[in-house]
Length: 124
Image 1: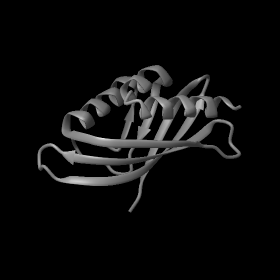
Image 2: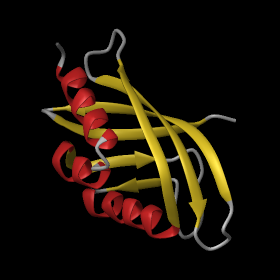
Image 3: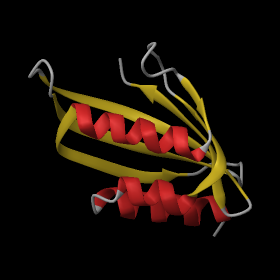
């Protein structure tokens, strides 16, 4: 089993157990690069460093009530350093009260036993 697949399995297990923030602390490199499909002034699309990524996660959970989050995968291909996880979420935005469902995939790149880049693509 490739290192990426092992990390991917651990990430999915931790997300399914409601431990997404713990997964970031355990599995991500200090110099992680995170790329969202879109960004805002408050939350830019590209962030670098573990503190920025932890802050993004805190912002998400402070601004959204997550009713359900399913993580599936990891999906692996010919690259030994990458895996993909699919996320399906049922969420309410706290400020507006709007409830919505969303799906996204995270493409993860690993190096030396850690996730060094994550990139999210959304289902449209």
